Structure formats: C-alpha cells, structure tokens
Image 1 (cartoon, rainbow, N blue to C red):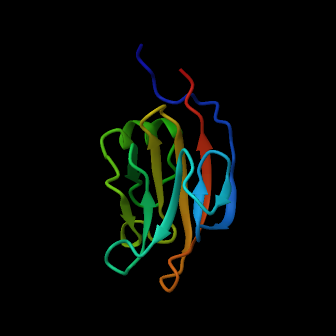
Image 2 (cartoon, rainbow, N blue to C red):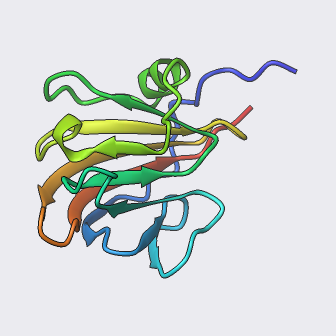
Length: 134
C-alpha cells in the first residue's frame, strides 16, 4: 500500500509561546517530563551550544530562508533528511522554520523558532501538527 503526501486538510494544533524545556509531545501539544510516542526536546546538543533533540524514526528538513512551508512540501523534503538525533540551534535560529516527519506514519510537525535561550537551552516555538491520511 502506497501512502501519498499529507492531505491539504490538516488537523491544526497551533502552539504558540510554549518553551521546550522538557519534552514536547508533537501530536497533543503538551509539555511532558518524559518521551512520548512522538516528541522533541532541547538540550546542550553535544557541543554546549544547544539543539533540538529529535527521536529516532524522525526525518527533519530546515526550510530555506523564511519561507512558509506547506505540509506537503515538508513531507516531501523531510523524507530525504533523516534527523540523526539533533538539530542544532545554529541551523534553526529564531525566525526560521523546520519540518519533522514521523517515518512510522507520515505525520508532520512544522516548527517556527521564535526565541532561543542559550543558557538553559529552552526555546519558544510555534508548532503546527498535521496528521497523515492515507
């Protein structure tokens, strides 16, 4: 069975101004103290400069410039970019967007970085979740 790109009808879950101090569940839009089925978080990034920590089976795509990505474009582009664990803050500075794709089901999260605190690695982001429909 072949799955197509996410449909144009997203299940919007905009989350504005939520710091990613702990783990953030990308599907429910809740901050959690532990990892969930599909979540992200922030930490030192292995180099002390901060990064988004991404789960295995997640693809990531950093949107060039400050373009507004669609769910379809995110899904298509992220497919070719396995995340590898971290997306460093220097690659996704405030004002930029990146897409995450859950490789197990095709769900998409579009994250726009609003602010980054390099002291405690917290971020403020605008996150929209799109559920893949086959």
